Length: 591
Image (tube, rainbow, N blue to C red; front, side, top):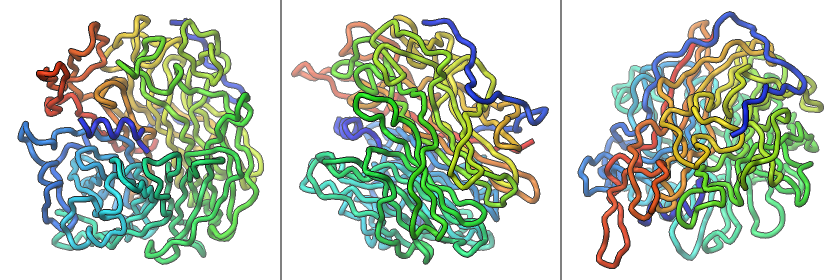
């Protein structure tokens, strides 16, 4: 879920580079070349079409080019992208859409080269009959955390998300839900205009009604479909985190056996200790694995890491959780997890958005690649040292280290785990937000990487110079690497054509950055050739600006059209390109 304070406010108004430490294993090339990437494309800020080809005030405003309209506030983040397994030309993406405060949905019918934008039905101004039949219509007014999966036969798309009341009101109603679409035939006259036929939305987890959240809400959902062809093929699985307001957060799980029409009552699958950020995979034999991140216990780092549980009966019951690993932490902090200007300023003066651990898990549904694979961002212990400022990354005040991507593997149904295996031998830059997918004997990993940051240092956040100013507009790029054995990776490939800086201040009244919490990767067999598509949040289109509220400019401000009011306060126009945070994506072919 996006930071609620950030969401409410935006709507309302150097150390030397150390050698990469590889604790257990090393990178070893398994191919002479990395994956071959196409041309990246902007997924968002395209023309909006409603699911029934009608229109309403929200669709009109999101399409508006009038300077007075809200429609040009085009902040978009936290993307998914899934490829239809039967028709690889059909790619679907979803994102947090701040034009609508709802779930953006994009579709491409040419393999991701060009895109049309839309919204999942049920948003407050939805005038369509189907949208007003959604259980979330009127009950909630904002949505976040989009996830999705196709069925194995390519006939159904399942789009999961959370929704809640983001403005002050009597009830929060933080719900988890799944929207079901049937994929239209390519011969259907409507296919090119809208390839999906919306069936309906089912509430999976009903959220508590406490006003202004009060610590009680559902968060961080994930969704997966059994694509194995086995006895549970077609089952739809969803997990999420429930925060009860008092006591520990817990991971809940639910399943559908009737194409998303109904879901079972959510069951607790995690122990009574704090955790968040689940993910799901289905092994080739139908076993279901759910992982989540464990919070560090008070006064100790020992619990920080990832746990897993397994179901061998199609998601009806689960085993006792097993620890994948206690991780060396990489979490940028300076008293808080995001720092900026004004009330959001931190002691170090650095500017940075949150980079939480969102672990990802995958298995190969074909069974050609044995094992269960978990991708994490973690600290490199060999680079850990004392911090030169109040900024820290290791979970221990006064200590910093380099952030790297680690892969952990189990070959005994999750009972024991080996790793970390490194996805690249690059020794410069921080790596973050990994995602992973496996198919037909291949494992593909994507992540974002600051190796091109000219001011890179483990002593400071990405994109910051030593004096806490902007180090450049092209400090982060997106990469993909592939393995045929799950432990050694070939050369990585840059899939973004242009770098960007993730630290532009667009949130909390243009005071702090927010880059979302994750990326996405999906593999498909296209006529015997393994291809994939990956998406990421990207600030390349953001127009930099100045902030008249600050006496000294740090270079992280965006063009907001600030206007001085008679009472001495400032208001923003928004529509000047300063909020053009977009989703970009790219296709690639495996070597």
